[in-house]
Length: 231
Image 1 (cartoon, rainbow, N blue to C red):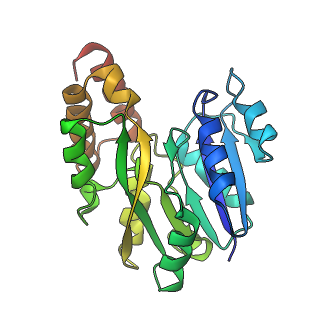
Image 2: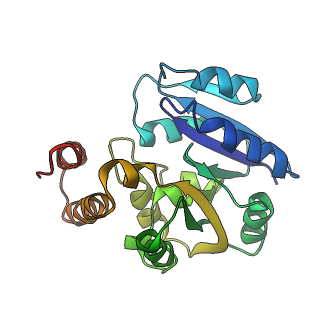
Image 3: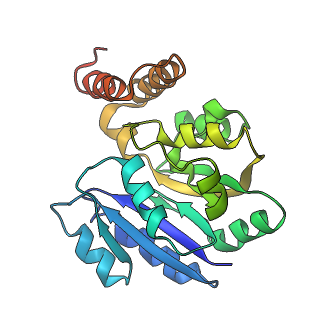
């Protein structure tokens, strides 16, 4: 079983090396690394090449587009989408392989923020609940290549909420796995914008998505709220 690890990036030179190093250290099975960069102005592309990743350039900085581009060139039986500011569990490849061989077609990991605190620990527990509203891209997403095609892949017109959208499509066809191991992810946005402000913004985004608000309008409203505190 071959795993294609797909990493969408935009100016992630600071955190990408840690992720790529973890993959190399812990990987014992057949895999490939695909970095889909949105024309970063830092050394993201150079770092990807230094770690022998397949580098693809996207003219548009949109995760849905970038991850779909990676999926289209992937040669693995299973696709694993992971953000550049995350670190997978030590045995993540074996965890994914075990889940797939036992019948799961897609799933994610639990979450651990770094650094964490009492507020974030609550949400570390929250994302372990098997509800669609509890899902997020920071948990990573593994999905068999065949099932990715069966659900139509990422909806590339979406500017945000692409992770929820593909899981939403998938659960109509198959059971979703939440693995016990924890993905470590940076809490940099909580530090930058404030814990309550960012979490409130996420809640508004989820509500608007389910109400059918246009994703570009949703992205702009989120950006404005985080910058100015106004919706």
